[in-house]
Amino acid sequence: MSGRTCARACPERTCVGCRERAAKAELLRIVAIKDACVPDPRGTLPGRGAYVHPAPVCLDQAVRRRAFPRALRVPGPLDTKALRRYVEQTTVAEQATR
Image (cartoon, rainbow, N blue to C red; front, side):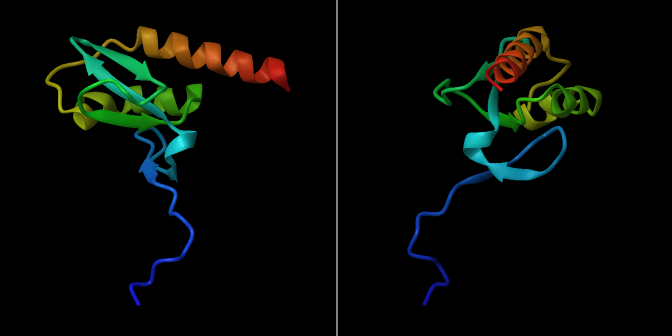
C-alpha cells in the first residue's frame, strides 16, 4: 500500500507571514505584477504565487520579514498597497457577517 487514504487530500500551502501550513482554500494567493503585490483570490493569474492568510497580522509579518520578494523571486521591494486594501476590505466584510 502507498499509505494514501481513499479520501481526496486537501492541498496545503505555507503562509509566508506566520509560516504555518494551512489548506490552500484558507489562504490568499499573491502574484507579483510589475513592482506590486496583487491579490489573486481565484488563483488564476499567471506567474509564481505566494500564499498568506487574509489577515492583517500575517500580512504585516510578511512585509516586515520581506517575504514577498523572496517567495516571488523578484529583485527589490514590492508595493503592497493594493494587497493591504484587499485584506482590510475582506476583514471588514467578514466581521460584518458575524
